[in-house]
Structure formats: structure tokens, C-alpha cells
Length: 572
DNA sequence: GCCGTTTTCGGCCCGACTGTTTTCAGTCG
Image 1 (tube, rainbow, N blue to C red):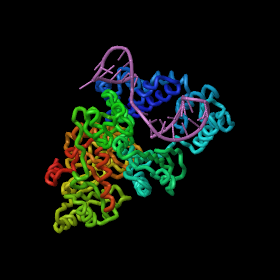
Image 2: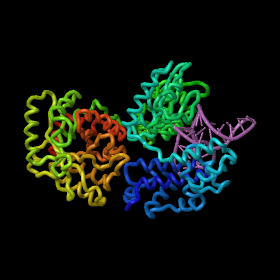
Image 3: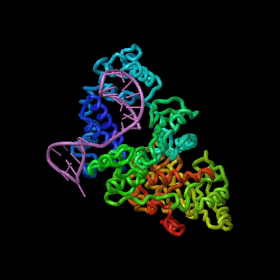
Image 4: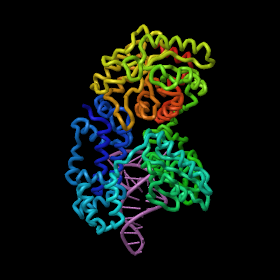
């Protein structure tokens, strides 16, 4: 089994932790963390790139040394440097860095003065009151450590983006009522549209005498206040979501928004560009000496370092700054570019609304077309359609199209890809359809090779058009099945198929780096809601956000094409 | 350990808050 990028990233992150505790050069620590981010977020597998003879030193943050270490991990599955470090510092100590209030310095003191190596030993020492006697520690820190261990901190929960949205919206509404408040926005990973959110970063601009921090503390969903000062406060909501609030003057809005949107690595890169131009960039503005030269808008901050505005979804320090310098940033797809939706269900299978209701809802959204794609008979739990029932539905769609104005309802099916790669519907029935969406709903545990070949065989069927939810993952609940996605994408490209970006908020399948890979290969992506009700047609916005994180432009998106061009594509 | 519009050495982002201190280190984002 080839070593995955995540495994390489995990090794680099652990090295960074251990080096930090050992008191190593902090910039070397950062180099490992930067490299971990690069590897983790890269759309192609390091193992396969090495096998293809590619030079990893081409990647940002990877130099000669780390390229060699990646090769060692890929070749041997291990890294000798990590093993050496683990002999000096117990790996369990690295886990303690995750406890609030404990950083490398304090963990080192705990290890050296009290001989603590495990979390159990840490808990025991805290219970006996030994920690408060250490230099730099006190009774409060000791109590905080004990509390954190007991509430199993470190296993923090992440929220799906749309869950964070509903919590955040309510909180914004509450904060807008505070005195002297002007802007209230959510920044952070939420604004970058990461698929999950660990905390909410809220930025407020307000005049003098504002009571917005008190207003936050008074919010009835606040469980406890973690810290609080003049300009910032951190609270934990009862749901377990952390909220960081920051107040700045209006003149600093752009600089603060940029700073709190992140990501951290993107900010550091921008500030480093600033340093080279003799500028200091912080959350209050861009400064040359004492003089503020920009900061009212984000665009003004970028302009000072010679860059065009960079959309929040791109700010992951994954090449967007280099692209901005070369003027090759993508012109990201927007919801307005979407002309239709190519995957949805009705009451004929497991949907909640009728065919006509779905069509009317699509008309209200201004779509030019939709595809009705019921499950096929294999999926019994979803009342999958037999050939006979599908034929009848096609007749109903024909009659509906006769009376609809401005919207074309396409005849489709979400047909199961069977274990051997054949499709769960005879070819002569598929032939009558406008759109054939193929999907895997069973047999998740095949080997990587078998799963890949199963999908390739399905795409060999000339009626096959779009591969739905291509990796089968459910965020936080079920991992993607084993699959050589790059091979699937290349096959789709050469056979004239498209790949779905499923917009269901717990799927968002493909992820951002896979979208970038698809784009680089040139496969069109269909952003589809897989709606099971009229309300779920609105999931399109989640799909578009994910597409933007994947650097997709209008031209990369199949359902931004006009109807005639779309139908031509379906002819393969 | 990386990297270059001050380039192959010597830099490497910046500020708020807490708790422990008597002026600041450590942590956090």
C-alpha cells in the first residue's frame, strides 16, 4: 500500500511538535509545519509523483532535505529522524501541546522537572498539586490543565460549514444590536468556506463606547467566557463551538478582515512580502514607519504588496500568491454562472417532492434545465426504478415539458454501478435518456485496484455521462473508498465523461484539491445538488463554494453551459 | 529547514490576553 500524503504530513507535524518541545530553532519547526501543509493539501500523491520521476523540490516549502525525507518515507514507510527524536522525547508529550495553556516551553518544564511522559502522569501530578510549584506555573494553570484533561480537550469537534452558518447567523443578529456597532462579519475558515469549521472568528467594527463584548457575553447560548479584554474575547457556546470576537476601528476594517480571514500561512506570506517592501502589516493596517498607508479595504492591503485582490476561498497558501504575482489567478465560478442542476430525486424514488414541484422550484431559481435522476432498481431502500417505471416517468416528463416555459426537464437516472462495473439498467433503456449519472452505493470495501477498474468499466458504457459523488465520503462520518482518482479523471477526460461535485453539505464530494486536479486534467465538473426536496436545490451554493476553493472557473463547470452545448456533451 | 526585486547567508509576521510576575514570558490566533 502506497504511503498517502496525509501520512507524510502527520510525520512532519509530529517532528515539528517534538522539535518544539526540544527547544529547537522555531523557524525550522515552522519549515516542517509548512511542508506538512503543502503535502497534505496537494492534489497529487507524493508517492506517485516520485514514481513518475518528478522533482519534489519544485513544490513550495519543499527543499533538498525535505524532498529526501519524503522519499525516505515513501520508500521505507518510516523516517529515521522521527525515530531518533522519539527516543529523546516521548511522543505522548507532543499530544500535550493540544491542551489549552500548554505550549512547548511548559511541556518541556513538566517533562524535565517532574519526569512527566504521559497524560496520566500529568493528571496525577495536577491532582497532587505538584504543578503549581513549578516556575512559570501557578494554581490557575494547574486547575486549567486538570479541567482540560477531564473534559477530554484536544478532541475538539469540528462543525460542518452549514451548521456553523446557522449558529453564526443567529449570533451576528444578536451582536448587531450592541451599541455603536457598524460592521459584523464572520471571517476565518468560515469565510474561506472550508468544509468544516473549528471555531467562528467574528470581526466587528465599532466606534467608542461600544458594548459589543459585553453583548457577546450576554448571549444566551454562551456557556463560558475563556478570555476577555478591551478589543477581543473568546467564548465557548453550549454547542461546543468556540467564538473569537475582535473589535477594531472602521478605518482598519480591511486589514483586520484580511488578518482574521487567514489562513495563517497566507497571512505570513503576505506580511513577508510587506517586510521586503519596508512595510509592516498588522490587523490595524499597512504601515510605512508610523504612517498608515492602507487598510480600509482588503484590496488596499493586497495593492500595497503589488498584488490583485485574492478571493477568500483561495487563501490557503497553496500557490495563490504566486498566481497573483503572475496574473494567472482563476476567474472563479459564481452561482450566477449556474444554468441548471443535473442530479435530483422526486417522490418516484426517495425524494420528498413531486416532479412538477421540483420543476417549478427550478424555474423560480431561473434555471434553464434540470435533470431528474431517480435511483435504479438495485437500490431497494430508495425505491429505485425498474426499467418499466423509468419508461413511464420519461413519458410524464415529455408531457411536463410540453407545458413548461423556459425550463427543460431532462430525462435521467442515477444508475447504480454494480460490483463488476456494469450498469443497473439495460442499454436500450439508457439510450432514451438525456443524462446518465452513474453512482456507487454498495461495495465500498473493494481494493483500490478493483474499485478503480469497476468505475473505469462503467465509464466505458457509451451512455454513461457523469460520475456522481465520486469518492463516496461523508465528512466526519465515512472515509472515501479506496480509489485511484487521478486514473478515473484521466479516463473521464479521454472518454468524454464528466465528474460530479456533489453539493450535499455532508458530502462536498469532490474536495478542493481533487477539484484542482480535475481542472488541471481538463475534465468538466458538474456541480449537482442531489436534491431530495425543493428546498435542497439551494445546496447549489455549497457546491459552488467548494468549486471556488478548487479554483474552478465557469468554463470548468458543465452545468454552466447552455442547453444545446450540454446536450451535445451528453452525446459523447 | 527554506529561500532570494537587500540572493547562497542571514534572515524568517505580529499583536492581545493571561497568569505569573513586579516588567514579562508563554500561549494563542
